[in-house]
Image (tube, rainbow, N blue to C red; front, side):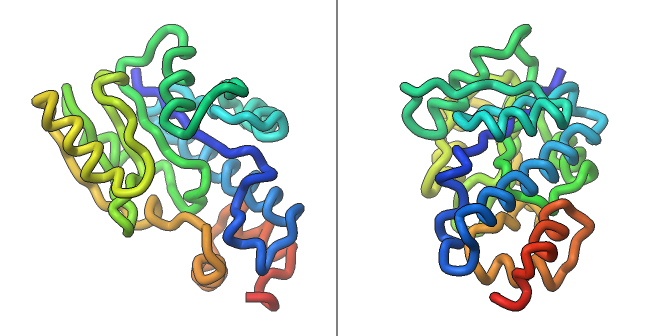
Length: 213
């Protein structure tokens, strides 16, 4: 039983590095569109039994529920992403045999990409998709709580170290779409040039972003 867990920030905090080209409301719309793409890809992946979204934002949770995901409200006393993920995992009932953590801002991920990542998940261990800056774009674990979450700067070596310390198998799989988050204006330009068939691309076109970036 493999479940997917998607962390999502409060919309008021989403995509702050795009403030020079997007208004606050546009950043909110972009975050919701990206979440729609991620949840849709996970839901369509045959190996994923269910999808959960953890967020402190009611609008995010409402969208997750409409998309067929389990909505997990992040409590006010949670500090940081890793604690949010740990508590969300503990709230899952029954506990999953394996867990896939994917951020809510990789809109070009496809169900096939999800399957390729999960195919590399060992019977006991982890599979990581690295981000370009030695972070973690996606992390799958079996058992689900087999290591402590170490998301953040340089989380790739931190996750690998956690797994190796526990004597677990570590597989690293590089998948381009999972490395394509949208945090900078240049990444907006690149996404618009690729013109993927995604809710994110359609939302950006409706905003008229091409003229601004």
